[in-house]
Length: 167
Length: 113
Image 1 (cartoon, rainbow over the protein chains, first blue to last red):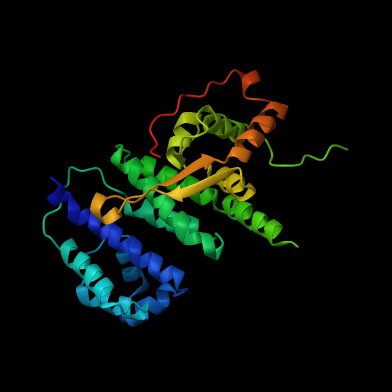
Image 2: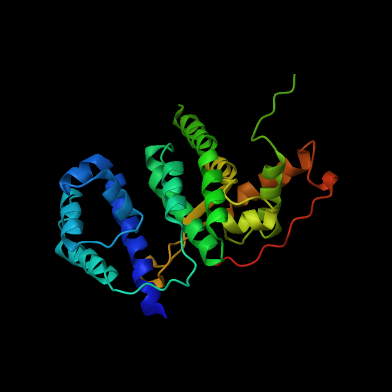
């Protein structure tokens, strides 16, 4: 069973890693799209794991993100190759791509240093919900709640930062 | 004029603290806390962020390799020792408290150290 579901899991995982690398280097989606001579939505789809990965695209992104270590590059390119295994298991509970995108938006207004952590945290919760059998409506509802709480969460993070930064 | 120091003890805040205090040494992730508190998923991160910033809570990533497990790693939360004391005091001092409303907190399950 793992073999059939593996390719879907791996796409999301690789997408998450690419997102993390891009964000932590302060590179915009536009810049990444330019590097691939492709659209913003292509980058977004890659980071949410909703498309197959072309090794060349992943390689170009890694170069843009400054990943030069040959072992690291090989590992990630290998991951990309594995995601292209044909055959998806349709019966398995899946993450709704729109919900995943809404969660990325929910993490976006947060302070720079927190964005990546919370994006990953929210995505893990969405995953758990999907695994527990949450359908499209429930997943979207979860994502919308996080989106609605983006400002309060950002405020909580910023006001505490200001407090701890005070002499 | 009574200025309230410390975080506002809204009902969701109290419910979250009650869940965490039920098993103070246990680590829990966000969804788990929501479920035990009877709160809708995706609504408690402002609360968790506030307490983490205050030092009442500490958090860490689950110690797994997402690639190997085939799933994302979770973020676990736990009360600090100081935080547990402060939480107990804050709950005791809360004017409209969860207990007066007769709300029950479901027992927490799971969570790995």
